[in-house]
Image: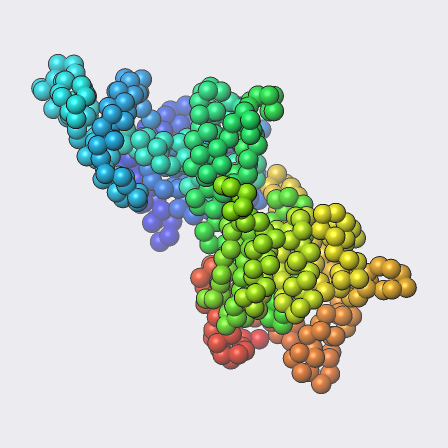
Length: 553
């Protein structure tokens, strides 16, 4: 039935969108096999040696991904196309609309913009061929504006491109709309590359026709986020309206192959911990360990290299913080999404006069005054790390991300410039989750490589004692628990909080929670809303009795 539904839906798409039918017909005429239609991709598709799939992002935009034989993987965006003649008409209409636009009321929402655009299109176009031999001139708003004859299809195509280019992301829009994209990377006028969540790195068919077009695109994008790029300020970091992170390197003086940019996509609904377990990023025991840590006020850092999935893991495990507690998040760019109903979201402000700027340091300090149960720091880079450790010392639980591949290097970075946390304070941190990214069979995978506990500062050694409780074996792609009957955090920190007479009972609790997570994975409870509904019920009831019988340990 599901198979029939997707084929039926794509048959409807082909009737509704002529450009899709034309693309597929042309593809088959070249001797290629017609791509298999899907409404949603599956993670196990990554294991296929060859593939040839098509799926919608937001119609009329579609994506064709394929790898056949020895050819590389390709990612093709399918959207309406304008002929040369239609493009000439489009340019004429755009200029007329720009003349008329100042006489329209300002719009605040996308719906208002589209209604305004419909009115303007009606003013400057006609579908009555008999009314025009070539152009029909009319006086409008004091300007000499020419009405342009267009067909119904041309009108739809032009409206699509006007919306796409004026209020959306131009030629990047089909990629931005694709929920399976992690990163978008462009260097000069070469074609863009993307990192696909299922198929890894792929070349696209999207490129900029000239360096002038690329530079204009980047200036527009930077102005939209309030950080105009220029030859004087060629490098900027910022966030797009949907929360995606963008880095721009402008000007050939700095980037010799031409202006470049990278966009790290933001998911409105993050991956859940059960989804990450299903992907193999971590296992149920690690999930249960972090559940016990975050429920019981332990301070945890997720650490690793750039693009290792730190923020994804942080967002996933936030569901383990009691849903009845108050949490604060402090970030440079809005990436953290907390499921707790009482969640205060704080964002830095680096634009405008210096006196009005708000740094991460200021936000962490402000969060302390509000007495939250948890402070979530998006990513520690500078002196805010010192305030974060002060928060831990005063009894506030903190969770954050950090750039360091090992506990030793993490401690070195925290105790050195510019953070300068005294080494004797490092044991205020309880656990560190280390994560890494690597390619396996051409696809990008992410794995928690270890979970380390911070035990205490040793005056005799003038150092910090640590213990690794989980390790990942890359040869078998499995995680194993080294902390059985040997976990300082579980036995000495969490067991007393749970009032266990025998501290070894904490391992029974660990196994019970791992069983709950396994039951959720086995029943494919991996959606963001589904998982948080389960965790919310758990905390409302004060334990597993709030769960459906099939999920209980």
